[in-house]
Image 1: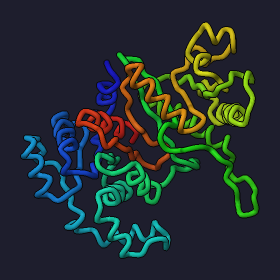
Image 2 (image 1 turned 45 degrees about the vertical axis):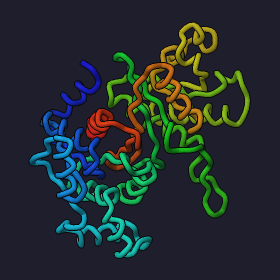
Image 3 (image 1 turned 135 degrees about the vertical axis):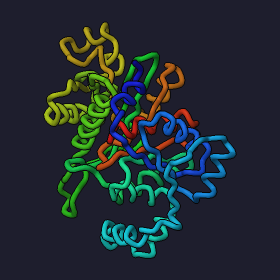
Image 4 (image 1 turned 90 degrees about the vertical axis):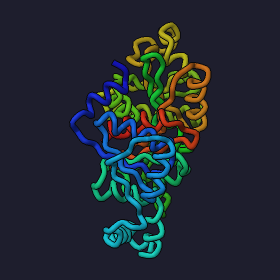
Length: 334
């Protein structure tokens, strides 16, 4: 059974409801029609009802019976505006909130916040920032989480890997209070990303062996980035002793049993890693794209981590197949 068949089997009977913020988009409609035919996940489409129906008819997509919600005619808009004003705690006026909620990204996020849907998928026409910003402002991070991060699930002929964070956190810097005291260290942030990536990996059927990647293996190289990864490894091991996490590891030591025997014999991760945590976004983004373009892996993501509810982002270059699969992934997180 492949990953998506397993996820769908797990979702059967749960009636998870997913909001699509870009209802009239043909890729969204094709995926929604397919989900409707499956009868497991319930799509909700945001947009002008006539526009959505016309686009579905033009593409011959059967969305009959699916809920289509137009923010412009939503009967509970006043209550939604009031709730958003409360959530923004004086940072946005009622007029600002009403204007924001006229757009699918904010409106859809509030539907999730209010419990009218379980999950949200956007980004077919919105930028990543326009999907993530409403989520950060309204859904916010889950208890105990200090930041949002991302993970890509990589799949090739049944082989599954997880890679994080390749899309959200540009780098990790110590967070300071007004007196200059460190309130959240860079290493604590990277450790949190590692633990969340391990949890995501487990959700998708991977038994996580987490490699904290570096240009150094166990002190073979020196420098601030090596120190960061080594410190983050120790913190992550303490935060989540249930997971096998090791570092700092070079990529060859992480995946090659032969190199692992030479560089870090006895590690529970080296030579068999399947979950990779990058020290900053540049190496992460390059790394997953190399695996995708040269290694023949399909890349699913970015899957957002650390949120109070599942909100995920599509590539603007996505096709209907990617929308369909990301909808399944997003509902699996709920």
